[in-house]
Amino acid sequence: MKKTFASQGDLEEKKISFVELATGAYGYTAQGDPNSGIIIGDDSVMVIEAQATPLMAEDVIAKVRSVTDKPIKYLVLTHYHAVRVLGASAYHAEEVICSHKTWEMIKERGQQDWESEFGRFPRLFRGHESISGLTWPTMTFTDRMTVDLGNKKVELMHIGEGHTRGDIIVWLPEDKVCFAGDLVEHGATPYCGDAQLKKWPATLQRLMALKPAAMVPGRGDALTTASQCIEAITGTEKYTTMLYDIAKKSVQAGENLKTCYNTMLKEMTPLFGHWVIFEHCMHFNAKRAYDEASGMEHPEIWTDEKDIAMWKKLNAE
Image (cartoon, rainbow, N blue to C red):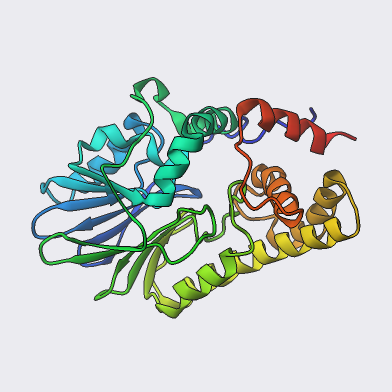
């Protein structure tokens, strides 16, 4: 292979930012690496997204301890990808919460996802030997759940499918602050390998209708104004819609995956090529878009072997 597989060559550490979006609501961001969120109430703390390893989670915990000594009672998983969840044991949270559909994904593909993501992006699994196993929820819900942190009511909502079929958002209705998970990215390429691309735009429109004033996206800087939130939601919708539209046209024309992928690169690079992890994502995104356009509603289960085989195929001359 001429190119380094996925992000194995990405070794540069990123600068961490810890930004207060409203009283007691913070974004932990890392220059395009996976973000976390923190909500502090009178009684306890909620952390959104665990990070990939307990060692990496310790930095999130240190930021929490810089502003409060209240216990971290809740850990929320907006969806299930290893890079987001395998650091869960570091928090010693009383409750680990996700949607029921995400729980189903853990059962179906949790171990394969761990092995696949570790092979793609080893830098994000610093201290991987500290991972105790798959992260399992203690609580799940179908559509909506309210958590009371004391003076803060936190709404957990499954507003639709998109990045995965189990996505949820974390919403502070009084402050209009949203922790969007990977449903929304800002200056970063959406990963679509497990996506529901036909449903994603409608889910984003439901999120837009909430009119968030601030947001922590899955990747990218914390967003501190309503206009920035609109820009991030719109950009994510534009990318995912264009990806799927190209795939549909390619499938209808009887083209193979390699031809479809080449078209995507040609048409999408001028618009999105400067976004973080663009090249990393495009192989997996092209495959999933092509599969869904071909009628495969349920995404395939990625494995480390499948990842490399597909990468080689799409990079072949």
